[in-house]
Image (tube, rainbow, N blue to C red; front, side):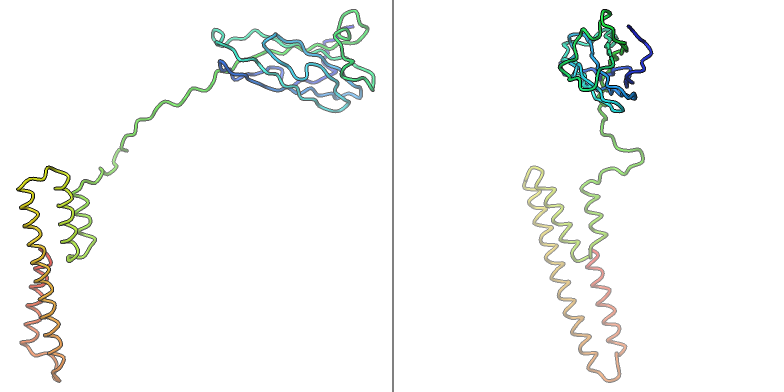
Length: 246
């Protein structure tokens, strides 16, 4: 006796969806749910390229069984990713105590006296996701350009003291020149910068010493600073600032 009421087992999903990829085995699962108070035996029929585990079994009352369907690796994709494959799931009521090995194909034939449910499942191939397109690294609109060597020198000049800035400027120019062809002109330029730098440092140190000496002498006076001392300190300060700005 045949039945199409589909009351024995609920099958989910009714479409087996495979993310298709060539030369790769792909699996999906389905759930067989028995909402009755009987033991339900089932059997699956599928094309040869599919492997079903288990392909037959028994679902106890008020329980669910999982079935794994694996598609063997395919050499090429079908035209337009269309698939006409179908699965057939048949189920019958079996006696309590029936073993899985007792589930045979004869239980699902027309000649048997069993009430057989049949459910056909469609197979759908899902195209694999497309790889992301390469994104060229471009500077964002409105972003600041990458700082050059001169920008770096200017930045350091503003953020450091005047005294240390002369050393930074000299080192940056020397590094920049080292990256080019080392000629007699570049050698002369380095020598000139070296002499000017050393001279400025010596003058700076000498003025500091004279300024400290003047301050110490002024402190020895009881009446405070005289007009001459104030003028001398002011002149020394202005000269020191001029040298440090060079």
